[in-house]
Amino acid sequence: MSVVIVTGSAGLIGSEAVRHFASLGLEVVGIDNDMRKQFFGAEASTAWNVVRLASDLGDAYTHHDVDIRDRDALAAIFRRYGKDVALVVHTAAQPSHDWAVRDPFTDFDVNAGGTLNMLQNVREHCIEAPFIHCSTNKVYGDRPNSLPLVEQETRWEIEAGHPYENGIKEDMSIDACLHSVFGASKVAADVMVQEYGRYFDMKTACFRGGTLTGPAHSATELHGFLGYVMRCAMERRTYKIFGYKGKMVRDAIHSHDVVAAFEAFFRNPRSAAVYNLGGGRHSNTSHLEVFSLAQQITGNEMVTEYHEANRVGDHQWWIGSNERFQLDYPDWKQVYDVPMICQEIYEANVDKWTPEA
Image (cartoon, rainbow, N blue to C red; front, side, top):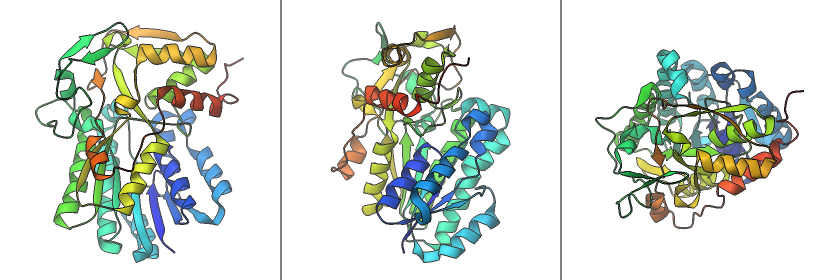
């Protein structure tokens, strides 16, 4: 039996990967110790998803409550499955700018150290297995904020005719810019994944995601943009806007489309590949625009609170280009756009995200 190991298996992308590869007839081994609860509190816990995966998938899914910083525990898992491991999907991470500043040691140990632990185990036990790493567009630091932007009624937009008009490409420099502590730890992981690909001739890919989203997100204030917007609208919470007049732009890609890209790489892997992966021009929104959409879907007026100062390292405008990935994998197509994503998040949580009595 071919085995897929998925870290962060109860999270948004991890759980989508578990279901997807199990549906292809592969045995899936999940590694997730619910650190999201430690990072962001009880409402962000992914424990509910572990229960659901076990119930839905039965013997096709084996869960390990293991910390990716625990080298001995990881080695035991990899020794158990050995060369039966056909793919490793590494989604586990500390994902927040704000949280990283509070505890830089944990942030770096999880993001950089945990990734190194996974890479070395693949090298030692199943070197032929492709290694997919969920990186982030934050590896570019605040470099995107130097782009020439034009203020429009509901959003910032890049100057017409700019080389990145159809999306930021992988040739953007990551040097001489502000990354945030979180961004720096993700750069370290990203570069190490590339290095193992080149130095040890392993099949590795860094997917530098934009806003990754979908109904399986345990959305909370510090992580999960579209999910948290919908949650605020549905529960009538106050959404805090940080800077840029609420016109900052994000591209958003559904977990289904992300995992479809993972499968494409799995079937035809490359060494040390680097891809931006996001909603691109197909699926993007500003805060103001998605507030209006959330109001239409829920029938509730958004309650917002504006703070003039933007968060350190936040992008004023990010629309990534998927061109490089689509050149390598022309059969991959995006399905979801922002309205579809928000509608699905609403329908998946309408009985759960309700106003407090």
